[in-house]
Image (cartoon, rainbow, N blue to C red; front, side):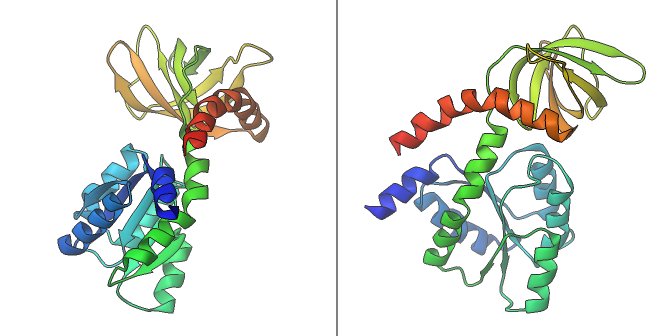
Length: 245
């Protein structure tokens, strides 16, 4: 009964597994799928780094010893910024090396899992991350809401309308779009008070003149205002889901 409840709580959790040993990666994939999670398995660490910059995951399992970039380098890449800056990170290794553990924790690891992989230990680590996963899901939970927003560079300014907003960014539609990776000043009108002012980056350009903007800088006060604006909408989505579990 406890295991069924745990599986229900983990349903829909996106997990990335990065290990250059395909046999180990496939074993972890099977264990995670058996627990009701949605694993993406990568054996090429460079390709995994690209995915981590472009996609949001709820938990990342990463081998330490891999061809360049190794797990330590990928951990630093994750923590430097982007969608997975705060994603729970579990480092995999076959070595009981305290110096290596310290190095991994300094790079941003949250947990360590030793090889050979044990199913019970693996699932215990996943359960331990669930509080962080829920917090991250709420941070990136998109709320469908239309607000006026202005995006500006030193050369141009675009007035747009949001299609959805999360605590980490938003999608907006305008008459034109800025190129991918353009840094922009953001002025987001929530309908009351002065607009939120911050900085962002174009991380996605979609058809119909739609851009995905990742917020990279927002004052503590404006971040709190955005959270207060979004939280009632987020809870309407997440609380019924939690009740079903």
